[in-house]
Image (tube, rainbow, N blue to C red):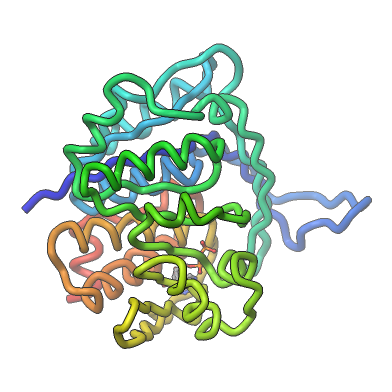
Length: 297
Ligand code: ADP
């Protein structure tokens, strides 16, 4: 069964510098390599979901520049419907990423066109209503996230929020979220608990289902009144963890939309993320449905 996913969020061009050790403040270092690759948490989740086999609509905005065209072509090339991706005056969003030799990264996001995605455009609600899942992140204005989450809830769609970059979230947004997928730093920022199990318990007071991703240590799932599920990560050699969380959230949503149980969905999401961290880049690193199946076989 093909599941339909709508992503309401950001699209960026990632400008990636590979370096031995990332520079500290005031320091200049020589990098090894530079690449540009389409990214942004919204577009990354859209690509991950499309490659995992879902029918995907991307709602958002790019600038009328070269990056905007490349971002749209990259999404369309993986089968994502970009008819609701607006082209606006000015620049596309950019992310300035440093990847070090241990596979760690640091990122500056400049929103540009993404800053215009502050509400629903005509037709957006129909796309959301026709979807099994709505995927949200926090790289667009908060008003946009809130409007989309409310539309998801009104139409009985599963609303999945990746609360990144970390920010305070008022209860009127969280009350429309079904599944929250923070990494451990975002979870700590939301509830002030460093310990993942305690953070999980605190988050479950605000949303019905939560997955906290723990990088190489795997992930932790909880639901109100349900058991906690611990999913270890697959042991692989990580070279670039840039879009691990987006791959995870995209594939998790596809699996749940297809009716998989939570353990199976976590297993597929972890496998997809493990495949992605072994490759450089964000969009370029996401595995196909077949690659995920082969990895788990
Ligand atoms: P984010 O990219 O949002 O910071 P995480 O780093 O927590 O998210 O990674 C998300 C998921 O990706 C993890 O739960 C895990 O399944 C997988 N993952 C991340 N890093 C590794 C790694 N080094 N080895 C294997 N899997 C990993």
